[in-house]
Length: 278
Ligand code: PAF
Image (tube, rainbow, N blue to C red):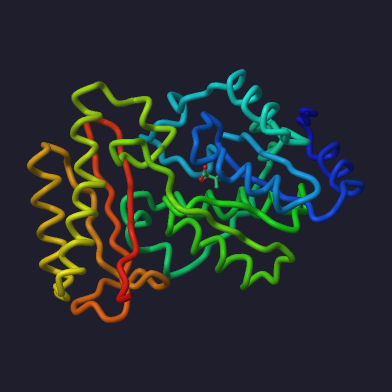
């Protein structure tokens, strides 16, 4: 596996890489969720690149940019073992050189759910991902469905800006006890790890209510809040919404996205599931 640190070198590699070329954008601290994307990328594409870049533009001033887990050596080994061709590892100055001024804003859908409590987040994500697309020129790019709103934002950006990239997504990968895999899980103490299970448990309860015929979005939201709060976790939002527009639903029709963000201690975790009539 080759490690590339500059935009110039990455562009040169991409220009001669075998097609289709797949890219998996990450912020590192790789877990099985990332690795499922990497394996899919490897099987679907003739060339594969994984970027590891902790993107300052998507963190708010009081967020965990400096403490964000960085595990470069173990990430490198995992990618090497998975047979990835290139690790793209730019420094912040390579992506945002002095005088940098351009940001991408996907409107409307980014103002809801995570966009409310993290107003800078989607602007930072869309900006860095567009830059990564322009630098690596992938034919396919792979993202996880845990960040469902991020995925929709990036699909919208790709469509609106006529990007020549196909965005593929893969389901959430969970620990054996149901906790959605996240790089931020490393922040959790054993007690917090237990509280964090309230996210996936409340989603299972929501799914079960829907299966038994409940169609009131508010009743489902209320049950989720009850389960989470019992575990002394602090709710950022609980949403039962349209999976494309993120507008809250009242009466659930064919399908809905059930999504939540919760503070467990100082760690903010997200999880979601789709509920739909079968
Ligand atoms: O999902 C992530 O890890 C990040 O938001 C992404 C897409 C790599 C952009 O920094």
